[in-house]
Length: 84
Image 1 (cartoon, one colour):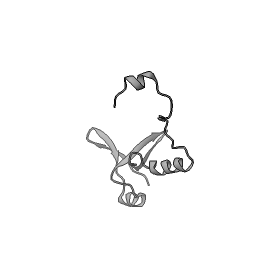
Image 2 (cartoon, one colour; image 1 turned 90 degrees about the vertical axis):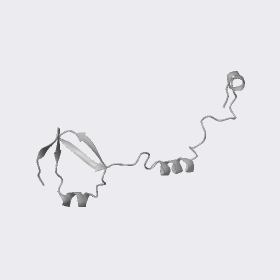
Image 3 (cartoon, one colour; image 1 turned 180 degrees about the vertical axis):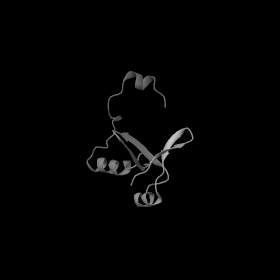
Image 4 (cartoon, helix red, strand yellow; image 1 turned 30 degrees about the vertical axis):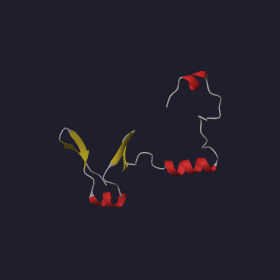
């Protein structure tokens, strides 16, 4: 399907036919990404989408231990100066 780039205020845009929008299942908010000779439009993803499953996978592999382990020796500054 061909269309034209049209002036919209100070910008330019493309009218997307209703049929294409229905078939693509795009959400109301989208992300645009420019490539060589093309622009990709996709539904916007939620921040940190998929992190929950990634954290569960890390835990299953034992890769979720604390990096700031309290059993490590403390410095003099940690003992005398640091306050929570």
